[in-house]
Image (cartoon, rainbow, N blue to C red):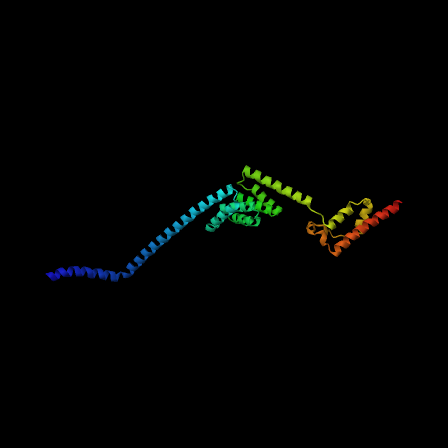
Length: 259
């Protein structure tokens, strides 16, 4: 009787062991899947926590950069925005604001790089405006005008921005006029100007310039304006000398004829 009582529990254990042995593969796969699922949940939670920390840090840095801008601490503003971009390299607001701050500091090449990074992601009005501002600071007036004209054609253009852009365009055009007015003539350009404004009668002058003077027009192009009067080579000096001699000869011939 006692043997039959003891055999019942033993039979249950035997059946359990048999079940485990027969289904061990399925059990192991199930345990592995559960472990993987738990690991994935843990990794996701850690990632979400990290992203939340980055978001909070970014917001704090953006606030600090705004305070720095209001207090005209543009170096501090650049530092804060650079920290934002370390966390989020493609943050368009941080890139745009840093470009503006760099323009104020006169670091136009760096500002242009930030503006291009913004426009690579999206053709925003502010991105185009700061690009124009950087190019203007670099004296790249033609490219700056192209950027500003793109702003004027942008669908999101407001009246305030339009007025600001038009003012910038007027400023660029005035800078171009001032540059031309203040541009010094090279000795060759001055000699040509003297030749054309000489007191020799126009008919005689035309004859001189047409038959006696052969001056390459490239010598009087805008690119020659960078040549210094103290760095003339022998060919240029001889050219100026010949021009003056021809003017004197034409004047002498005219005076003898009238006499």
